[in-house]
Amino acid sequence: MNNNNNNHHKTKPKKLAISDIISMKNKEKISVITSYDYWSAKICDNAGIDILLVGDSGGMVMLGYDSTIPVNMKEMLMFTKAVAAGAKRPLIVSDMPFGSYQIDVKHAVKNAIQFIKSGGDAVKLEGGIEMIDKIKAILDMGIPVMGHIGLKPQTTKLWEGYKVQGNTALSGTKLLREARELEKVGVFAIVLEMVTLEVAELISKNLKIPTIGIGSGPHCDGQVLVLHDMLNLYDKIKPRFVKSYIDLSETILNALHNYISDVKTSKFPEDQHSYKIQNKEYVQLSKTRKSMRKKSSSPLRKNE
Ligand code: KIV
Image (cartoon, rainbow, N blue to C red; front, side, top):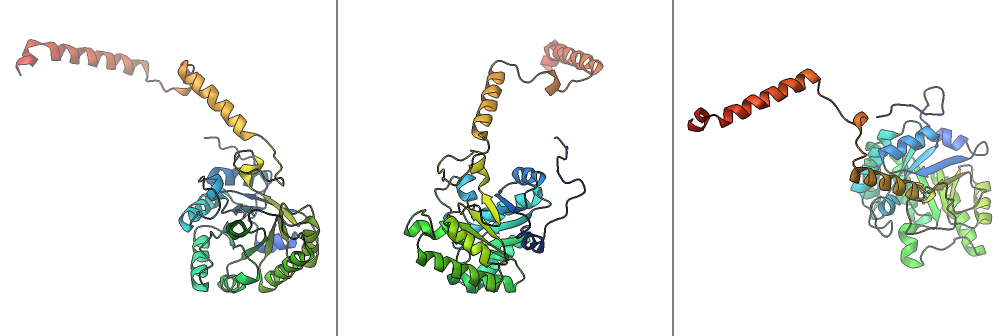
């Protein structure tokens, strides 16, 4: 295994705290990316990402579900543990899956605790004013919460599908009110998903806490993308707001084609990939085999 540390931080990177994220507002943009496993968390950390979101999108891009609705606590906790093992500096925010926080306050708190026990630093849950009691109860336990308004994939899909939010005066006003309520109750940041850029700007300017946009224009205080979308590793849905940075599917496909071809043509493994027995040991092994063969074919042995 390659132990090269490519971390762009020269000294040992300091783990980011909630207060570090909040104080980035109006100073520097916050970079957020989803991660669900050890290796990607490690690479994202080495790249200098500020927040790793263990998104419920993992249900789709890692487990192949058609939406974020089926993913459960057990799966999300496993993703969180793997990310926590791989990441040192970034803040780790775990998405609470559908059904894990809506039922009642006690249930929501119990599940939020599970994420912190599994290595997460904070939880995110979808919802505005209707979720305030659950958010408050989780915060009262000392667990930081990230809000998520605008398009809420866990429930918006059930009603109207994936549509732009905040495109009327009424819905823009409602979103601003929700964002203010979330800030008032104590969330440390709010994801704005597929909100018109003007409304996202209005919300960002009216809050002291950072907004993290996805499909919500350039005026948010930070941006989040699903890792598999920006690397071209997921082809079921391709939202317009995704910027593709590399076609990893193509790169991986080429590597696998080369591997298959090497195996079929015996080009792999080569000497450098193999382990050798010492010559004197091999000579001894041949001698032993020879004498064993002689013994088993001798008449005496047959009569034994
Ligand atoms: O699950 C996820 O990836 C998310 C982002 C889209 C914000 O919630």
